[in-house]
Amino acid sequence: MARQTGIIKLKGTLGDISFYKSSDGHLARTKGGVDANRIANDPAFQRTRENGSEFGRAGKGGKVIRNAIRVLLQNAKDKRVVSRLTKALVAVTKTDTVNERGLRTIEDGDMNTLQGFEFNLNGKLATTLFAPYSTSLDRATGDVGVSLQPFAPSVRVAAPTGTTHFKVVAGASELDFANESSSFESTETAILPYNGTNTAQIDLDVALPANSVLPIMQVIGIEFYQEVNGQMYPLKNGAYNALSVAKVDTV
Image (cartoon, rainbow, N blue to C red; front, side, top):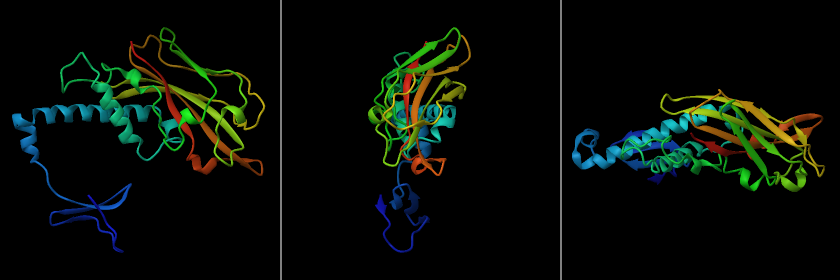
């Protein structure tokens, strides 16, 4: 892979060289690789097919998660969240001790390894919110919650420069990877002043389907605002908003 540095940037294929644009800029690379038909049928590529199957399953699982929490994710994500989440789910798949290689699944792996996953590396919750929080889940009723004891925002929140206000957001999703579907509910605090005065206790509760037997993921995040002439504006278009996996529960 090489970077295009000329004034004119190319896209497409010229001979054996492909020109394209990515998040890293305008790049070029030579065509190559093994014939697709051989990979699909040659016994020598059995491991490759198994890896590809599990990678594809992880990619679809990542899409299920992203679609589920889309309401919150659109305000707190980085440009590499898709690939990072897929990589994390491939690792989950490899912890599956039930199915044989090539057939391993996310739901049969150790999904607890996703706890703490950051959806925005530009604004990590782990280095932003220092107020401890607790999670709760009642599968019988479907009630899911996140609670924070009173805290002083200017002490417990490492806000980016220019912040005047913030809010805490939370959500929970029931994830059906087999059918590539989900249910999701979210809630949030009011927009709160960023100062040294303690907040009230924060309880953010949502309700998912009762008696679920599917994996449930809870997320928590924080969004920053700047007040200008009485109006609240997302600080730097939400570039430093944080969203993280607070808890994963499997049956």
